[in-house]
Length: 104
Image (cartoon, rainbow, N blue to C red; front, top):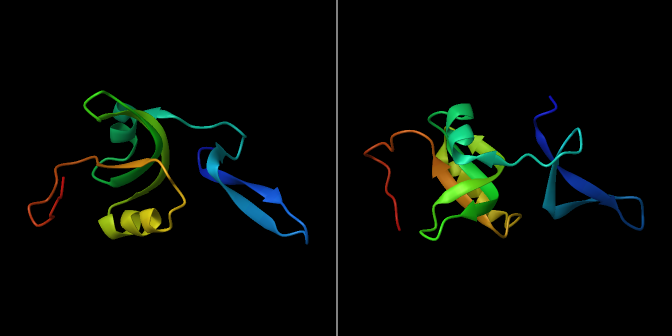
């Protein structure tokens, strides 16, 4: 699964691995930046957490690194609460259900 993103880890004293918070790389060592249209095609009808998003002047996502995706919104919100991603955006790639509340 070469397309899965894995945070780089660093060795510290005592031999334990510690995850770097900002460097997300695929197992083959490459950072995977996707355009918003690629994200919509790859993850239809899902909530997507995008790290390091590039934005327009109107703050719309142009591209970024997908670090999590799920059909369940709470899974993505839980990831955000971990504070592992200082710059992020959340997109839903389908039609937002009526029962879902959204705050702007």
